[in-house]
Image (cartoon, rainbow, N blue to C red; front, side, top):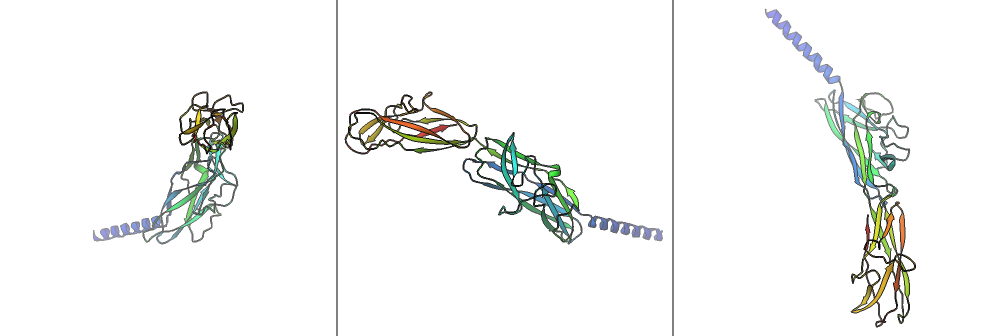
Length: 317
C-alpha cells in the first residue's frame, strides 16, 4: 500500500510540472483598439484636426522574455492613396492619416497595403509571472483645406485584412516578415462635417457730399462661404433705427440722413429681412460675393458732419 501511494504522488508531481512548462512557453496576446473620432470638423477654417485612439495589449508567456508586436493597419473601408487615407460619406471623401508618433511624422502602415511604411513595432517584456500589458497610442490627423467636402457623417472601418497584429518572442524590432501569431481587432475612424457658413463684409461709403439734391449712390459687399450644398439666405436688418429697407437712417446726434440698400444696380429691389427681400444662395465651399447697392435719395440736407449707421448681416442656412 505504501509503494502504491508513493508512486501516485510522484506521478502527480511529474504531470503538474509538464503542464506548467507547456503553459509557460506558449505565448498569447490579446488586443483591443478604441474608435477614433475627429468630432465635428470646420472644413471652412482650413485648419487641421488632431485626435488619437489607443490599442490595449495583454500578453502571457515565458517569464522575463520579450515579445515583439508588429501592428499593421491598412487602408480601411474608406480607401487610401500614397498621400492619405480617406473617410467616406457616400461618394464624398475626407483625407486623414494615422501615425505612430505624436508629432504625426511617421505614418502607421502595414505589410498588407501597397504604400510605405510597414507595420509599427512595439516591444513588451513579460514579468516574473509571465504576464505583461500596455497601451499603444494611435495618432490621427484630419488635414485642413478640404472646404469642398459637403456636410455628412464620414467613416472608415478597419477589420479583417486591414488589421494585422502579429506577435512573437524575439529581441529584434524586425517587422518585415510574416512570422508570428496573428490577431485582427477591428475599429472605426469617423468625422462629422456640419453645415457651416462664414460671412464678411465691405462697408458702404457715400463719401463727402454737399447739398443732397440728387441721388448719391455707392456700393458695399457681402462675402459668404458655405459648405457645399448648403442653401442659405442673406438678410440685412433695418440698421440702428430698425427702419424699412429704403428708409434706413444714418445719424449724427439727433440729425439723420435717409438711405436705402438694394439687391440690384437699378436700386429697384430693396434688401431687407422679409420674405422676398433677402438674397438666396447655395454653398460650394468657395467664397461667393454679393454686391450691396446703396442710395441716398434727394432730401433736406442736415448740418455738416459724419453720419453713420450699422447694419447687421444675417446668413441663415
